[in-house]
Image 1: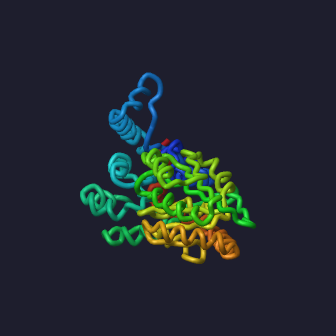
Image 2: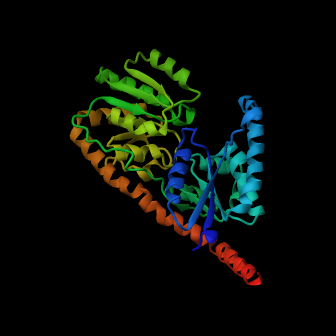
Image 3: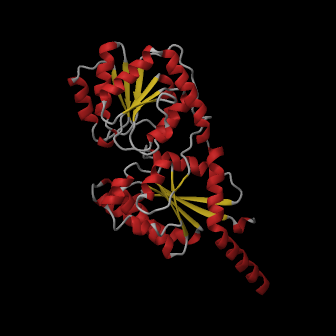
Length: 377
């Protein structure tokens, strides 16, 4: 395939300045695709920045949303015509409405192949609550890709066919460390928003600290609940709790290495990249069984699961691992073995095959057009 006939893939996703799973997975995908000789890859952030004299507009609440959306839609209209495949990462609700639905519609307006890469655990509620802007527009996509079998099942309930291509983890960036012995040092690192139920972690840690007074908890992440969580920690009489704030992606491997157990308690979730990063780092995981988590983590094999909002079960599981360190070590070892299926090597072939299958008619057409033009010359 000559350079002029490479498949031109445009990735649309949140920019790296947002410390979320979508941004991280988009970076990993772009890094992998840039090594492919049959592709050229470009990127459009969902949240493009103004420069110079107009930069101040994006510092004003509400105005920021309007001007950023208008600028983003303008960029789409100029850049989508020059690509073959529009690959748009998707969350739910307002983010979907402002960033994803317009990309699908503009992509089809210019007769481009569109991949909807839906990655949010709130999918079922989103599809049920927004019937006009979800299912009909999603049907326009040429492929719907999700990270787990959980979302495949959710989309099927709404008559939408989705395929699963898993999230990936860079094993060269996350270093497996066998903990011997395990220390009572715990980490939670989800966004400090209601969806991720960090208050449940603080309640569980209070029970843990009753049994292990020296136990430590690091709370990494930013969000609207931070001040309330700090107050809650004080009211529970907790000690050795440290709120780190948002942690850059490049600093996460060191943070995982600093602790010995990982806990989280989401009420809704899909396939958290955090879990496979913990697997790669040798951290036993204790979590609620929200959404797609049981599709990734097997109870008593690669981690321990509790019912949503059950802080007593979370604490009980964490204490069990602390008291039975051989079990904790065996779980960490099995989890590390399972993480091999989440590397770029395994995901690469499925992405490349998908792109080539979708773009084949376009690439052939472009090649014929170029050949005819050359003959005419």
